[in-house]
Every structure is written in C-alpha cells, then in structure tokens.
Length: 324
Image (cartoon, rainbow, N blue to C red; front, top):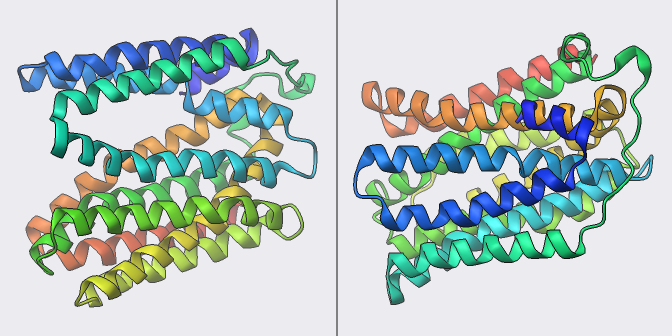
C-alpha cells in the first residue's frame, strides 16, 4: 500500500484505481478454479496486491478533493460507503451461496468489481493533486518524524488488532458459547458494520467542528469497553446490542483519524500518508486473529476479547502520548 500510494503521488490516482479494480474482477474468478490450498493462497496474495492499488489511493483521491476544514465530512462519506459494502457483502454472499451455490457468489463478486471498474473508467474525473511543500516532498523518512503520523499509526494498528480479533472470534463465540445459527451470526456482524457506516457522515461533520484528537480517544475507549463486555453476554439480544454499540466507537474515531491523516498527507503526499495508514490497518487485521488464536488455545475464548480491549487501550495511550 505505501508503494502504490507513493507512486500515485507521482503519477496520478485514477490509473491505479482502474488497474486495481480490473485485476480485482479477474482475480475473483480465480476462486472458482482453485483446487488446492496453495492455489487459494496464491489467489489471496494477488487479491491483496490488487487491493493495495485501490483502498489507500481512493482515500487519497477523496483527501485531494476535500476542502480545508471539511476533511472529516468527506472521509466520513467515504467510510460510510466502504463499510456499508462490507456490511451487506457477507449477507449477499451468504444468500447467493445458499440459493445458487458458491460459484454464483464468486461470479457476482467479479461482476460487481467489473462494474466498479467501468464506473471509475468512464465517470471518475482526473484531478489536479495538491503539491506537497518542498521541505517534505515525498519522503517516508521525514514522514516518520511526524508525531501525528506516529500517533495515527498507533491508533490504527491497535484498532485493527482489536477489530481482527472481533471479526474472527465473534462467530466462534456466538456459535460455541451461545449456540447461535449462522444466520444470526451474520446479523451480528452486519449490525456492527452498518451502524458504524451509517453514523460516519454525521460524526465526520462533528470532527470538523470539535477536537479530532479527543474524538479518536473517546471512540477507542468506547470500542474497548464493548469488547470487554462481550464475554458477559448470555443471549443473542445482549450480544447484538454490544456488537452494534461497539460500532459506535469506530464511527466516532475513524473520520477524525482520517481527517488528521489528510492534513498530514498535504505535507508528505496524500497517497503516501493514506498508504501507510492503510498498511497499519492491514497488519493489525493479520496479526490480531493469529495472536487471538494463540490466546484462545492456551486460555479460553473469553480471554481473546479481554486481550483485544487491552491492545486498544495500549494503542490509545500511545496515540495520546505522541499527539500531546
């Protein structure tokens, strides 16, 4: 992500988004033809490389067109679209698989990615990117000296560590401890994502009027509180409430954090800043489930959520310290 982000700072955003979406649509069909774990791993690696050309660069595009003082508003809109897709995607995939089979589900994924490619190619205008100050021009070394960047990386890494643990182990907890069906588990995940997405246009506007640093801290504290409450739930409705309200933490913190990233991107290159920010999220989403799995093996599944809450707390403290 940082590599493609840096290249987009030099060569423009649209071409990378188009190439990434085209690869996405082609790679989606690879899931249908895989016949071994090694082939599936290869497809996942290629899919990840294509994602590196889309997610941070699309965020950088939005950062480029965001007026000063309205960064939270427009990043909130972007996140609302992004997480709404993440919420409805599993529901759509599950329904298609149940009624028509898994081949239709992956074919639909490819068709939707192809549609996105055509929309971007035909309708997305090229934009004039903001020039970075000469003293900061496109330098990861200079970016690493920014206390705001260090704080944002601490926030994003800890948030995604908790998020990765939540996404992987909520289905296991709900099935083994509460005996919930796959359909109800899907509702739990969708409720979390959809509440987080629906609120972000509003919390993004709030981030443009109030202290963004404080919003990141408050959002993370809400997130870790509800993570710690998950083991105490004993039925579907309590767990649904906890999962939904934990999305509130992300809705408060994420637009504010991205607005801060946009400000740093104007100094160091928007694609570079968004690429590093997105990389921290991906690292956390990869390490979180692995670390949580080890904890679950040696302790129990409840310990996974307590550990996730602690990781978010540690990251919040680092964010507060670096941005003081």
